[in-house]
Image: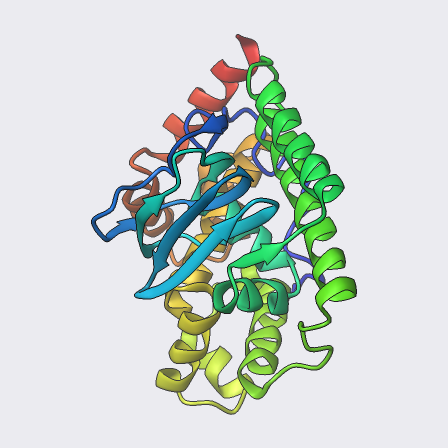
Length: 291
């Protein structure tokens, strides 16, 4: 049966630890990448407290100064060209996994705008509030709890909501309407959310949106940086994890509930993307909850 939502955010990561999914550096003289252009895997939110820095992102140059935020999406080619001697910044690095989860459920206008315009002037009070979010995340990282990742996710989501509200009100540059690409992606996202447990072929989604598979891939790639098939697969992996963490269903029952053609097909896909079998993942998660 199609579902009206993907799954509850509660316990979507139950039993998982943050590890290196989040790093906070409170007073840095340099940003977390060098002067030679390199692909940085994580999302970076950096706040300039003093001085200046010159940064390139995908070949474009940005000059960062006091009371500015630099927000860089994952997998961008970045370089820290130069800093003033008094440069100081607070920055956090957040894993691609979390940003992909947040962008999946968030108005994509914000992240499209941040990709185009990564450097923003912010009032000191907003910067302090923003850093407060990250310091709270850092505090929760040290706390042993099976809800660690879930708590972190929701704090990060709240930060993005505050950022969206601020940029929309203060800069008024995020369009209230959507362009045709964003409209198609939103329709695709909703279609996937409603049918994620049905194991439908990609032709179903392209036909439902009256698009070719090639065009659909271009739209999804532009919106979230991955193919349409990988996007669906990533969400189906999360469904499996959710069932493993929050139900007593057997692996065979989970495969059946997600309409895999066989349990072996699900086992192969899950291990290819996570490096472990569903049983190994469940055992590891249960062990984490008991510690």
